[in-house]
Length: 245
Image (tube, rainbow, N blue to C red; front, side, top):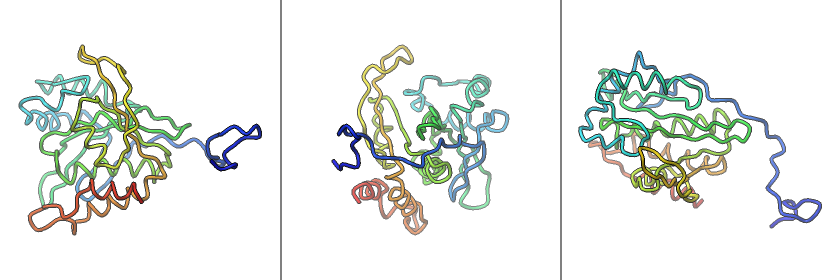
């Protein structure tokens, strides 16, 4: 350990952050991408389409690891949105899939910033719920990239967190694919739907971000997909290489 990271008593201390100032809170503005647009969630504009898209998951699998849902009727879903999705923290966004050709844009998912700590420069992404039409698409990945890009590039946050039920294997795999590093498990962290949740923690820092950003941009480039839409390079390979660089 460098002497620069010791105090006058010889004790080890964290590296200096001399010019740090609290970060702005995320704005209620859209985030534009090539394959999707994220808009602040609006029950009046989005609830009907979101509920219809969610109902394509006839087994309600998308709700298993969320503390709410499923919502059988649009009325109940809209009421939940009105109660939950209009706050500043969590700050919900609707994912609008952009058509490859002329056609209707369609709300197909939601995600939020939460546990926003401007003083520490820490922000979490959560409440991610992708309807079947959004899952495993370029728009699904780009939505997460846009949220990370706003946090790091636009707002200057130092830490970007992802937490999920430790038994939610798809969510854990998604975090790693997106380049977030596993930091451990908080045992018996909470109770939801009358069952225990051990919470897995993942995060990326501003030091990770430049290389991760380049990995996302490489993967999202249309040149990374063949004429049938198959990816040439996997994002998981690109992000893993980025974290080793």
